[in-house]
Image (tube, rainbow, N blue to C red; front, side, top):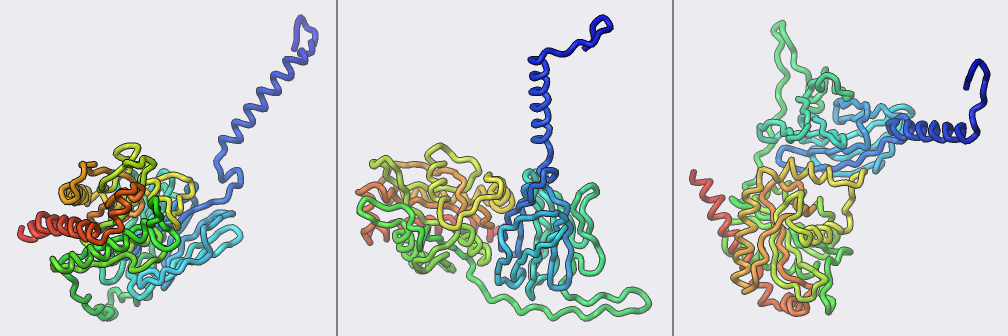
Amino acid sequence: MRRAGRSVAAPPRLVALLALCLGAVAAAMLAARPAAAQGEPLRFTLKTIDNEAGVRAILEFTRKPVYEVRNDGRRVLVTLKEEAVEPPFKKKDLGGTVVDKIKFIEGFRTSELVFYTGDEFAIFSTFEMGEPFRLVIDFRRKSAPTMAIGVPSGGGRATAPGAAPPAGGTGTMPGGPGSGAAAGAPPIQQGGGGVAAPAAPAPPPAPPRAAFVVVIDPGHGGDDTGALGPSGLAEKDVTLDVARRLRQRLLGAMDVEVLLTRENDKTMSLDDRTAIANHARADLFVSIHANSSKRTNARGAETYFLSYQATDDESRAVAAIENNTLGLDAGVQGNNNLEMLLWDLAQTAFLKESSALAEIIQDKLNTALEINNRGIKQAPFRVLMGATMPAVLVEIAFISNSDEERRLRDGVFKDRLAATIGDSIERFHDKFVRNQARR
């Protein structure tokens, strides 16, 4: 400091205060730097969804990477131009005819996620979503029906097969031979009287299917027992028993094909259950569960359809319990963005039908079982997310209630449950499916 032409030393307390302020500013600037600048590795999760058109792969990243997607014969490669990448796996076997397996190959300055395609693979397309940043890759099967590429509302950007992404994006998908084209397809001769190469033989026709397909999902199974009753009755055993009875009821009453997601006591992930329904191109998905509550007097049945926001705190708690099963893996950022994506992509089109089915089932359960109406509710059940058909989850009774646990051991009561849900499905079919077919 200067005063009247003389140099004056700053007081020690002022010097210390200035140093403290400068240190705080430096710390704030460091915290504000992007993760990439601080050397944080790129992390991601991968989800795949089977559907009628093929396979949808969803990559969710901790930040937006510099990437490139290209086709190389029987492979689709996602090149990540990042120095450090921490993958969730090194190899993942899908065993499908569209996508067979996925490998992660780590390099010095770039890494690659390699999708090995199967004999049914035809073309691929991509689009982006955020926030957080997600790259969605659609692998189209050869025999898929003609349909537009689905782009969800809320920030999704589509890239047509073989085209470059919109200007300004860090991702690139160069055109040229193979980009988005059928894997291994011969080039078509252009001009000069050239003749196009002969097309591949048409795939054999699909076997005839029933007019109506229902997938029943017995909740839990294997190492995941679900809720336990006061005397030790396991939810997983009750749900499988009721599901089998429901199948027999439907087969005896309708022209229907009925599939169970599990036929025995085995462990299954929630995502695999929905994938079975999508792969079967089911018309309905019904997940069977038994409820549990800390209130010993809680009783009755509840029917749910999917919503990102729960109807109430109790519904939110039920969904949290059912979602907390073996094999449930959260997104890399510990949030529900991936679940919201699946909800947007798959279930929005079936909201009205799912609500109607839930209402029919709940009304019939109230009447048949002579219980108080607990109403239909909505909650973010993971097992319903990604279903490409009307989907509901039925909590048939409170296994935590000693009286209802005793009823769940009774074969006559379980037959009534199965008959009631079966009648509801039949009524839904007559009211919605058959009426639509007449129009």
